[in-house]
Image (tube, rainbow, N blue to C red; front, side, top):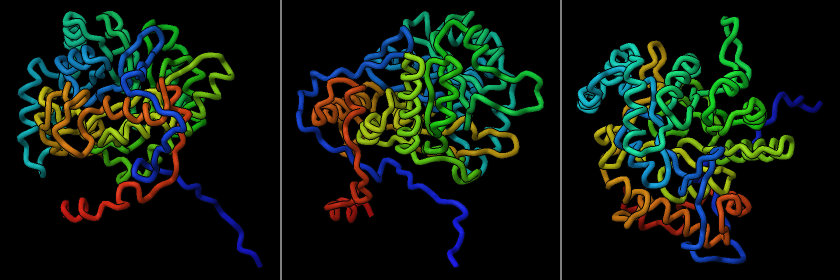
Length: 380
């Protein structure tokens, strides 16, 4: 008798398991165009700084904007709960490891102050920055209204997992299509990792989708909940949904791959997998200007009953401008991220980000170890 098959698993891949195949034609890196668009907003680099308190505050949001990308300010973080968030950030940075989760649960239990939401947004705008802000679905209706009134440019709805159809006890929960009609600025929604969920979210009329569940350096969702899809496969599936929706509607909705980036090569692979841009946390937490003082933690850390994340010490390596544009002072690929992307585009013969989507990826589980005996031996 043949054994009945209950379920078949498909293979999925992360950054360390794939490699980019060079193109048949190459072009000079300086001739490549890395522009990224969200509705009528155009950014010169396809890189977004994550909505995490150790990464983004008013100062880094302004700086990132001036460098060509944008940062997302977390409207449910310390910046909007405390008049002087610097004191809280110092407390988190200095807390012993065994006490930091309890401290964060206490810190993030303070109420969000409506006046601080407006003040932080206006501070970014007055300094000449593009202002993107983030909220969880439960607080979106209220915070979106406050954000638009204060002059925000982009609103991001972000949860561990987001879908267009959510079942709850609420008679009327958050309906993206209705929010899209009420909010005039671009709306980005995340996070998702599947073709079906991504396609349904795009059909609600939103402006962009964040891709990724659990790949971030400070996130433990995959360990705590067992939920997630390796980032390359998740990006490819959501890119397929974007292309299907383009054929269906004639509207192009960019996808932003969020999490798991450690070096320039990961960014290049994420773009080839189909991303229009990438969202970065831990690498930017290492910038001298970042508010985390060399520490990085995720938005799910302070959950009252089931915290998912940890504070990680990433250290401070270089100014943000050097991390993005070099010159690099390290050999691990964590600096000059834009230079790495433009060089990879050059060797693939890709003049634009969309051209880079046409480059080939191969399964390559030995890509980071083949021929690297001395590098591996030296690091152990």
